[in-house]
Amino acid sequence: MTTLDELRVAVPAQGWLGEALERVAADPGVIGRLFPAAGRRVGREALADVPGWSADEAARVQLLAAVPAERVADEAEGLYRYGDAAEKRAVLKGLPLLPIADEGVPLLLDAIRTNDTRLVAAAVGPYARHLDDAAWRQAVLKCVFMGLPLSNVDGLDERADAELATMLSGLVEERRAAGRDMAPDALALLDRLKGI
Image 1 (cartoon, rainbow, N blue to C red):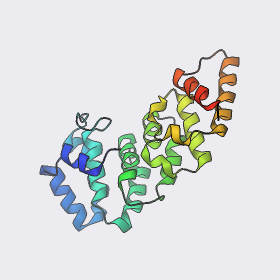
Image 2 (spheres, helix red, strand yellow):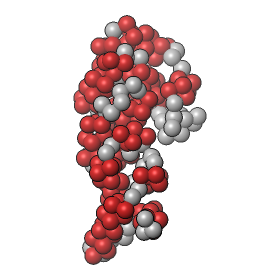
Image 3 (cartoon, rainbow, N blue to C red):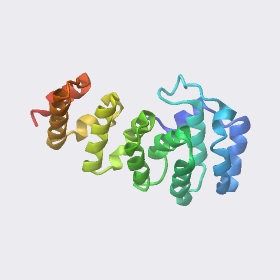
C-alpha cells in the first residue's frame, strides 16, 4: 500500500501546495476551495515513483491529511459528494491513509454502485478491508461484470470464500447462456476457490 510519506516525496509541499497545506492547517474549511484546484495547480501527470497515482491525487490526499483528525471524515465525505470524478477518486484512494476508521465505508458503497470503472477500481483498494463480507463480494462481482482486472481488488486471495465462488459460478453460467465470455482472471479465481 502506498504511504502518505511516499506521496509527500513524490509531490513535495512547495509552491502552491505548500501554501495550500498551511491554509488548510490554519482553517480546515478552506479545503473545499483548494481541493478542486489541485489538478490545475500541480498537474495530473502519473507519478513514476508511486505507481497508480497522479500528481493531483497525491496533492489532494495531502490536503485531506492536513485536516484535523476529528474533522477529516466529514471533510472527505463533502469533497467526495460534491467533487468531480477525479476528486472522488482521490478521496477514495486516500481513505486508507486517513484517520477515519470505518467512517468512509458509505463512500465506497456509493462508488461501487457507479458505472465509473475508475471509481470502482479505487473503491476496491486497501480501504475495502472495512467492507463487510457481503458488500465486499458484491464489489468483486462488480469488477468482474465491468471487466476490471481483479488485480485491483486488495486482499482478494485472503477474503475470497465459498460464497464468492457460488456467486461467480452463477455469473459464469449466466454469461455463457448469453453467449458471452468471462474474464480469464475471474475464471482463474473460480478455479482456485473450487477447493474451498
